[in-house]
Image (cartoon, rainbow, N blue to C red; front, side, top):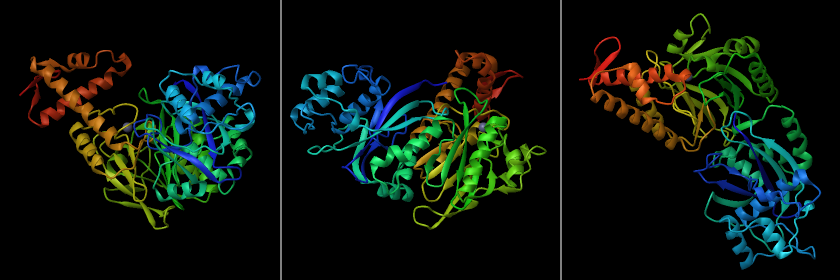
Length: 500
Ligand SMILES: [Zn+2]
């Protein structure tokens, strides 16, 4: 279970009554939603909890200080007051301070104290808190505030963690998101949709109750794009993976990709979200399966029965699930599933089916026609490498499928395990490089003479927990079978392999 990091974020409006907000583009290299648009903010620093700044409101003090400090560091906007109640204007001294804060040679409380500047609670009204749901490898408990740009100040982004930032009307941000021109982090999308036409200062009133419901356990509306919702379901999966992502995609006709595990509590969550989707006017057409593994199909039958839905999958998946999960339609490479009008331009929107064998013989990937989303199933994960277990798993086919995936235009990779990524090429390249490294290790081991599979596994996977060793052994076997097909290695007997 990952630790939850306290953080703060600010919705800054251009001025009182304004619907224009300052949004930032997170650097593509960042692990947490790199390449997504969000609001300024960041995690708490130790010195943010400074009683000299606010001796009374201990609980919120550090969060408010962090919000104020992060806003200044990231955008240059400084919302503190001089003793006469006025706001400071931008000058060379403040720019020097900003540099010094960023390089760690100055602390924020020190900077304020030296200049007699005061952080006023009233300048940062509280909206509420959002904690990243449990599926993510990095989780934040972020307290959100609103604020106004002081007269005489402007925002600018310095090169660093953020790529850019701009003042933009809430509605314009949503239009760009619907068209697929930008990615929004799920809390940002939720916030903007809730605010709609309202000015930023109505955020506490409009968003507060929603955040309260989330804190009490309501399902997070994780919208990856308009009409594309992700629901991470807790599974007994291979570490470090703890969840399998189900996805809803479609505008009118809607598909559920991989209904996840058969645990009753998780099924209840899934059913709850399906009810929500139906209430929102979506009509589920079918359940589609990426492949036959249990953490992806466990809830398929219960879900199909309850909502009277057919289940669609590749013919090889249908074979694997025979007698357990009835497949009403087999899906083939090149099939297109209609998703209704695209939320961006109203033109026909669809999912293309790609057969990508390797991890499983019937593995399917789904690519959408409007946003450049690739629902990657278990082809790759943003958490770890995938298991290729013969005989159904085939390493040579897996590498071919990975290269095919690499060639797809992809704005966002949506794996079954781990968070969404705007860095599809890097994720896939890392998977290819990992396999190449394992093959080099295998060849090095075989170069010293015939070796048993267990021996090679011990050597190549030293330090792997005992419980995972049989998966490691499957990887070695998959590697050997690939080398055999290429005429590079061959079995000597039941256990031992050699080059040639
Ligand atoms: Zn799998």
